[in-house]
Image (cartoon, rainbow, N blue to C red):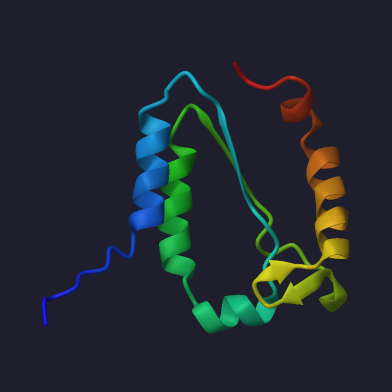
Length: 107
């Protein structure tokens, strides 16, 4: 059987490549709320801090972190996804707290 290598950074690598290859496009990247149990189970704080630091260095990226935003359990479909009610609730928060981006996007 052949060796099979998985690039654990594939998604992040592709995101960074897309951003760097498109310097004239503004990217608005949001980390949505995560259930506390999901955060505890995956324990990826160091990797998250590394990636968010890299994103924040880029001039054409606005990165907003709502990962630790507290929400009721009913707003989660499971530990990794928002429910329909959670999605609607969070969308309202996201829009209201970031109107300047939605109303006047960076060119």
